[in-house]
Length: 200
Image (cartoon, rainbow, N blue to C red):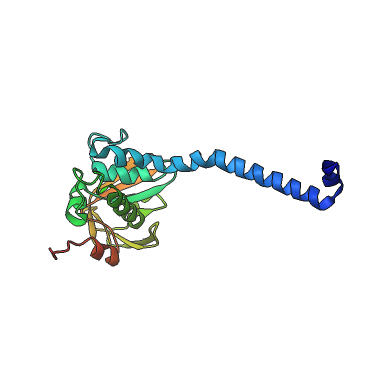
């Protein structure tokens, strides 16, 4: 008798329909959560296994190092990006990151946070080859974090981004153009935060 009463009452019927729709939306959302989590799974091998896990996409002539490979893995491979990636030496010299100790349990989260910040400073959401940079001219682009990149090229074809010079240019990995830099492209606040405490 109560069931018939609910069906005859329009407010109760409307409430049941809305409740059923909400349950359906929650159910569909829960089913789709693993897809969202998979976006970040590309960096998981580095966090779990450290420097021994390298991307198989790297060519033998171009060694990006474990941190460089990690940065590339954080970007979607099917979209156009340009990445001004620090060399392995620059990671160690300027950011004090060690491929030996950077992924141990104590340092893994800090390493991931630093790499993520550097990615934000040094990635541009478009393909930009060295040929597109005019000699003795300047191009300005916003990075993913909104940091303005001033890109120049000298007569020898060496590009510089905010004063950081390139070591290798025009490395293609799918839709991503990589330029290996002899330093780290970063803003002044972040640079100060990664300086050694003893002032070295």
